[in-house]
Length: 381
Image (cartoon, rainbow, N blue to C red; front, side, top):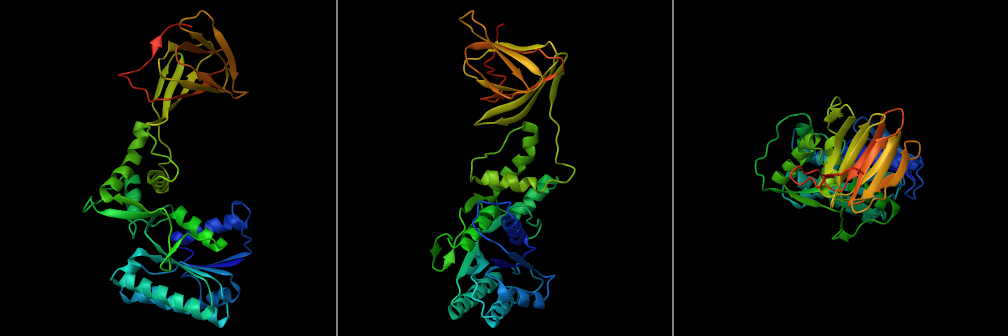
């Protein structure tokens, strides 16, 4: 297939082009599409480029449009006239390529932007009927994701950028509800359409799902929590498909180039160090333990808290004993052979560095440490 993308340098275009290139180059084998060429068209191209591309393209992603003009007439020039030009060139070549257009939920409203998008839709539908070409119209909600331009037309992009860069955000009415759609969901659905199995169509309009509805105040709180999480070490809700997971991925893309890293509090003493890394409400916490040669750590047991130890560097001995037994169970561990050791409840346990270098252990506990209820009781193995 030869695929034409108008508006290829825009927010949606960049994400779509990068995905199609991965498929074309064989880096993404999850899609069964044979792509010969990708024709990227944007404002830097000439009309002659468009004439050439429309001559033999097999599918058109029509993403070009105007949403922030200096003059109202630009709405109609960018969203209607250009669509007419695109269709006329396809007709000139007798090219019956399917066309997918990125429209807007504003198309159902009585404003110039919405009316111009609606006119573009209608012209495209008429073209499809005359040429017997498949037309996919997607009315998109408020989009967000990487490469979205802040301080332009996306409140999510603007707030992520501002919070990540230490700037204030403005909320006129925190109770206003906003429908949001994530760019990866959009691109995934567009590729489905390219493969010939788009989502359900309602009254001629195709949908990208899911659409997440959230109040502005809640959106602001979530984005602010991402910055605070570096101090609390908390991780957002990473459940597959959750809005918070998608927002966090978006937020990270707006971090300043010198702010990708952040320090952790290392609790250091003569035995080595202990550093908390990640904390979650649902899945406990992860810490990094460094023990110097000959050092024994632990010597305690838990009622309900359970842990997993993974030695990634050095050599160690992990010992267990049921507090109602004299039997000592031993496991030799090493960074040369990675294996996870489960720490059962009711067993006092320790970990001893038996090597000649520092021993580094990744430790997971099924709950965050609570100093008010530590569930940790000293007893030597």
